[in-house]
Image 1 (cartoon, helix red, strand yellow):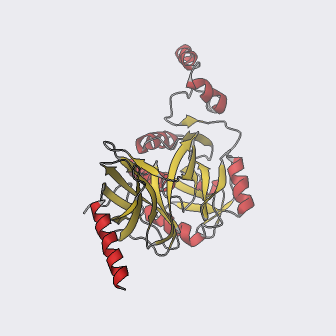
Image 2: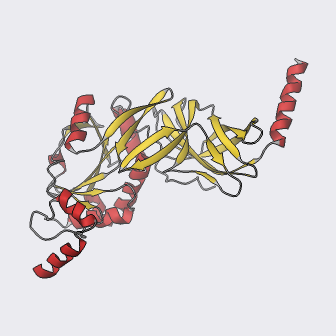
Length: 205
Length: 150
């Protein structure tokens, strides 16, 4: 079996897999090959995205440990975003639906990169418009910056006319039930892709 | 007063005569209270090359034309000066691409509301500007990326 897997990795190594391996360290903690297992980018073993310390929209301090036993899907976004954030949250609703009963073990976290405008009541109402179980997280400007840095997530305030918008990474990060960062999903991927990877992670002991 | 009425009539007549843009499936994404911005989407087509140069709406203090692009997994949104409508093809304002950005909203936009939007066009050949009004129904936030079904 080991031989087959090694061959497969060699065949793929010239292409995108090389990138995957570079970014992800190639193997999961238990050592089995992971290339091709996830629809998203396997980032198991990534040196970033270890934890966060933010306040949820109900005023409660949150760290990753609060969500042990669940798959966490963490997304950076902002409420004034007309397009990519609602699309991502709608997809999260659909993903949860596709998971059926397992959907109860999915915790969607929305970290605002625009804490100046996204006050807790707005965040709370915004989450409720999609699914009341989704939690929005925020920090002050410094904590927001530190959190994004610790996830290698990019965001930038950009003036537009009389206002401003936020450029931001549109990746969704998936943590397994033990709280380890495993997968980065791209915005272009479907709810089916998301549900596939989350279902795999839910099987992780 | 008469003069003003007359000019308004002439303007209205001119606008009617120049109604050269067909607007299809307009919709606006709903908001939650205190949310300050949202997007409007629709399909535009025209018999003559026409440029969408601006928009206005009573529900927003500022209305801008925007483009959303994904650049190496980073979402970027930028104001654009205008959008060309070429005969034979449709200018699609949709999530993931061009849209009309409603900024500094004066009210919450609820599912089922109708948002009037005045589109300002420029005839590319004559450089004459004209406006067309569209009534865009609101799709409730969380209701998907589609015009609301009637």
